[in-house]
Length: 496
Image (cartoon, rainbow, N blue to C red; front, side, top):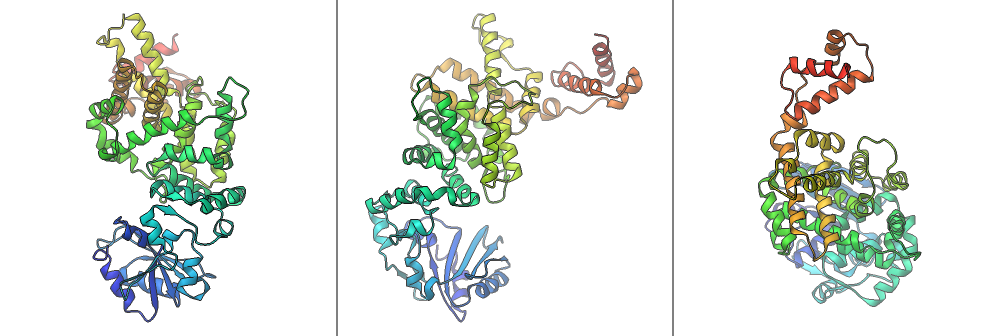
């Protein structure tokens, strides 16, 4: 850590002001963890020092809060990749008063860059060794209720036990959470769901009652699934689904050491090895520069089990369940970007699309005496085209979520034959999407709408668009390969 950032620290030490590294970066040093977000407390003009640092390291400077002297520097150079530096004036005029105003003692540790000395007035390093999470002062949660969510996140991801007084004050501050801005709620929620422990996060949020405060639609949806008149609801199925989602995403990201060895995971490793790099590239896509796609997938996964059980009609423009609109409004309140909301909506409104293929396959199995080698059991280009025409790139994540839900519903009694067939369906979809994209997903148009109107003497209208779409389906199926075949097919449609 010191060697990696030595040029930065040396520059800061030479300036005519006292500056300390504080917060999570110091905590990460003590835990031997990497850190790419560095916070500095400055006994002087923090914004001026930030601007000088940006100029020296060829970074971008942003004044975040002029009143409180908070500025940010973003650096992305060969020397420092995706480095975020936050500079702030010392609250209360001194380092110790600033540390006492922080959230938890493990984040209230400072490093004197000049003396290379740890400054720890609240014994945060002791608490870190003891695996204890403790607030810096009794008013910590009331001063900033978002710390309630941060406490749960740190507890989960740093494996810290929330000490009794902190836990008591956490519960007292919970009612203030809805008053926090949607943006701040969103950031903490996505960090929890997208960090690799989404199932545990959902269970804790539900147990504390926080889940209902942040996402009341979850409770309403799950209550709708119950047959008893109980007012409470269970998150067991969504949590087990998210546990499988995390396992699948960990596999894609190459984190094999985090994945339990079982039939569910082993079959995925066997089937998806050749697609892993393409899946990783997909997962690295950013709908928003500040948030990962993984977080959006896990957020959709929270609602997926309740919604996927409903009958979904492809191409339907109607709301597929009563809470669709309120879910989207919730995401708008949480200030997700337009692209994120549209992607989430694409997954949710097509939640049953993959299971529709499974149902078609079951019908084929019944007709063909359960002979899995029969060609009738393999998807055709038309089915693959229709699937991705409806879902777009979100169809990849619908596959992942559907398999995760199937595994969660099966529990320890996983039907190996049915599961293997579902994996084969995913293989066929992925192969069509990535290996035969020009032929199946985006076939080159052979004729245009003008061609149809001129050659077949029909007027502009919906019929022309319908014919063009049917021609694409036949191209994907391999039945139309030339312009003449396209005209012949269009003529057949008109003569029906």
